Each structure stands twice: as C-alpha cells, then as structure tokens.
Image 1 (tube, rainbow, N blue to C red):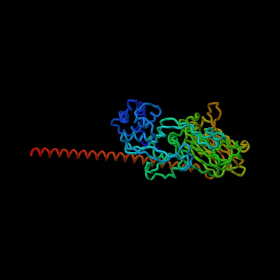
Image 2 (cartoon, one colour; image 1 turned 90 degrees about the vertical axis):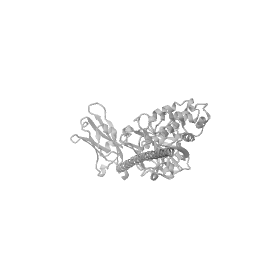
Image 3 (cartoon, helix red, strand yellow; image 1 turned 135 degrees about the vertical axis):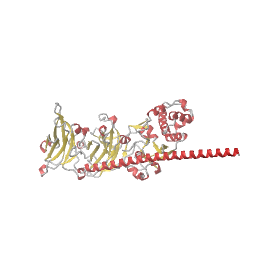
Image 4 (cartoon, rainbow, N blue to C red; image 1 turned 180 degrees about the vertical axis):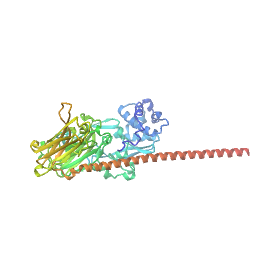
Length: 545
C-alpha cells in the first residue's frame, strides 16, 4: 500500500504543534520575522524544523483565512490577500527553506474520465514543493485549505442511486459551496498519489523515480480516484483507466482492501447515463432496477454492471471506513469511471433478488455463522438446464467445528416461476464438517440462490448469509473472473513489496548521505584544528627567535 505522506508518519505527529500554531496572536504578527520566530520557539534543535515550519505556514494560512482578522501589519495582510501558493512560497523563502512553485494541470470538479486538456474538466493549477529532511515534499495548499460540497456535474440521467434503487431522473448541475477546512491529506502528499490528481509542466516535479514518471496522455488516462480511495487503502483490480469498455453489455469494477481493514469498509455506488448518448424511451422502467450486482467478498469489493442500451455511463463509487452503512453522511467519493457500452446486454433484466448490503458472493456474514473455504467466493455460478440434460450445480463449504451442532442451514432459489422451475437441497455432513448445497434449474435464465442460517438454540427466523447468481448464460470471462482477480491481487502484492523495498532503500540512502556529510564535516573540523594548532606553534617559535 502506498503511504499517503512523504514524512515518517510513525515518528512525526503534528497534533500538538498544530494547536500551538492556531493560538497565534496579533502580537506575534508584527512582521514576517516575528511570525516565524513564534513558529520556531517549540522547535529548538528539532531535526524536523523545516518540515514543522512548512506545516506551520500551512495551518496558519487556513486559520487566518477562516478568522478574518482585520488591522494586521501590511506585510502580513499582503500574505493573506495574494494567492495561497505565493504566500506559502514567500514564507518558505523568509525561513530559508528551499522551495519551488510548480505549474501544471489538474482534474477539476467538472472532470469526467476521458476529458482532454482543452476541456473544462482539466484546468491550470499551481502548487508548492519544499525541501526538508533531505527530500522534496508536495503541498497542495488550495486543496488543503478549501473544501467544496454539494457540487454536481449535471448532464446525466441517474439510473440507480446510493441505495441501489431505480430513480431515472435528470441530474441538475450545481456549483455547490466552498468553505475553509484544513485537509491534512494534501500536506506532504505522496507523489505517487498526487499524480492521479495533478500533472506538472516539468516532469522533474512529478518527484517520481525516473522510471516511473508518466507522460500527459498517461495522466489523462489514469482512474479518477478521490482521497478516500487512498485513506481506505484501496487498490483497483481492473485496468488502470478512467474509461472502461463493456463486453457483451457488461463491465466489472473491483477494488481490493487490506485484510486488516476490510471488515470496517463498506461501499455504495451511483449509476448514471450521460445525456445524448443513448435513448431510454424503449426501455421499461420496471426492467431497470438492480442493474448493478454488488459483491463484497472479504477484502474484495466488486460491482458487476449490466447495460440495457448502448451509450456512455458514469459509475461512481463511495466508501465508508467506519462501518457506518446506515448513515450516508459517512460515505465519501472513492472513484469515478466512464463506461462505454457499444452493445447492450442481451440478457439484461431485473435481478431476481434484492440482497441489500449483504451483496452477492461469500463474505463476512457467512463466516460469522461458521462457514469457510467455499468452493467459490465470487457471485456468479454457472448452471446447466436440467431439461436439456444438464447436471445440477453444487456449492460446498467447510463448517467450523464449534458451529456444526449449533447452526442450522437452509437454501432457496428465487427467479422466474422458481417454484416449478428450480430445485435446491441443503445437507450438512456432520462427520466431515461440510455444508453441501445443490441447485438445479429446468428453464434457462438467471436465478438467485440464497443460503440462510439460524442458531438452533433460538426461535429466530432464518437470515440470509450468502447469495449467488445462478446463470445458464455466463460468458467465458465471467466464469474466469475469480482467477483473473487472484492474478491481479498477486501483481499488486508484488508491486507493494517492491514499493516498500524502494522506500526502505531511499531512507537508508538518505541516512548514509547524512552520515557521510557528518563525517566530512568532522574531518574538516579536525583539519582546521590541526592547522590552527600548527599555526599557533609556528607563531610561538617566531616569538622565541
């Protein structure tokens, strides 16, 4: 996983210092010199003094813009009236901190994946870099000080809202409102994260290793991900592109979370159609609900999207990192994709079962009832039509030894005329501690298999713990999705290990340079002392003569 910041997050804590900076008074701002002197007072002999001073400038600017203090000395007032990037640069220069103002382009709130440089979604921007602890750090002071809420692009028809319900309504454009709020994310942001948002005119200021720098075209193709994508420590399992293309009228978007954090993560989505790219007049609104199959499988969160008509769609995902799925206010923008559908899904219709936040596939709810090691984790299960000589399909699960006698299992199939077209059987092998669920369908189509459980010691009803989509029309790619995702996970694991190795190497290299510099300074001091001592001896000899 990429670290969010370029300082050592395990050793550097700004909490107390931020509070100190926020308490600055008028008497400390008689001049820029007096202001910096106030910021330096708690930093005597601190090895991170440049880093903390830059932090002070960042926090002070946000505090002052929010407080609207009047009657300040002119040179202080000027700092608050000019562009924040120039103010930060001026303060760094005054504190003798090496710095640079960087010019480039960024993806604005109007951005839609696929926009080119001459579009309103790509705008000019400047930001700061400063040097501390032997390396350059990026500070996006504008994003770090100002937050926009309530913005909407417009020009879209909302098909499914955040609750997974059909609405089919126009989305009106709205500028939203902007207010001052310190966003720590943008201070000393990792260059490998910042490159998703902004691209400098000079490649040097990407601050990436030479072999990992990208060109402008690659920047424009990158996925459009928000800061909470990185805060939630997510990784993208599908191709690294903001524009995706459907196959056979379907497209899958998948994320991976760290196993340590995945239980506290939940996701929701929003699906829209771009106006003017498709005609919905011939589509029955009753066929549109539940076009998106949500599949939270432990550390993997997948969305399989079906498209009823050819066109351009906007798929937005939102993430919560505190397991607050009942409170929409805690969901934040995660990633946005434009999906181009050239041909609709020939089998696109309403899903047979609304499974809510449980989703399809094998996840934590099934594990809580003692199930593990399923024959498949993913939501799609191929099934053959028994009337055409096909066999029934079987799913198997291991049961925790302490749950075999405590939990009762049950299964049912939901779909078109499911009572006469389907058959399912649930059996527990108590000797080997295994659950066997068999399913058969007499008619081609798509069905939902719901596996339910309850505690034998209570009178509670059965509750759904795992859901699967049974289909007689799965494509080869859908059947191989599990192996494809596992392959991508291995690639990401390898990349993370290489990234950690590179970061450790960079830290060690910087330490070696510091030690070499200290040795050089010590040697120079020793030579100076020898020369001084020799000069004194020669002077004494001359006096004796």
